[in-house]
Image (cartoon, rainbow, N blue to C red; front, side, top):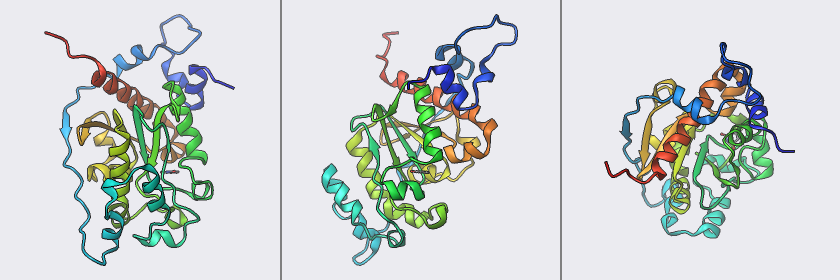
Length: 261
Ligand code: URA
């Protein structure tokens, strides 16, 4: 069953926000352009430093992960991730979760790491948070596999669904770095603090990072809340919706030909 945009916004729990108090009742949610205008932020482009490569030394598990990853194609990358033993997260995983979606996407969404459902199924964001993420994508008329790829900062489930440690994200970084290089997304959306740490090496609050355009390797990067956080903090879904519209606007600006004046 395909849902209307309004149903999607209801699904995200933010639909009432778009009802204009003095306007006549409308049958559908306002157009994205209307919404986008409301949230057009003054956005400095913030050049993020490229993430520092993990220190590599012979015998260092990080070096083991990083070896030759930069030259791998998709099948070889998938094999290497599946057998990775670069950090202790491998010890309790059922399987590593590489990512899913369009191999030539407009959007790359990056989360934190697999949870129990993802560990069991081998696909990112298939639990409750994933359902919300799918609704968020659908509200933008995109879907996993259609203009979108979904990956995580770490490929193996942190025990108890804890946040991955910086060292674990550093050990896994070469894989994400290679995914980004292979995918060549037109925009990257970072879901939550762990993803921000992994890609931008920035540990500031999400509130202070939202609405800004960062760059990684020449690709625009924007930041929003993690869907699992949104499930616990429902009012912030409206902010996440603003962030998605900002991402779409940033993508469109990226794609628009430069005007001759
Ligand atoms: N949370 C994440 O960050 N990633 C997943 O794949 C699932 C839940």
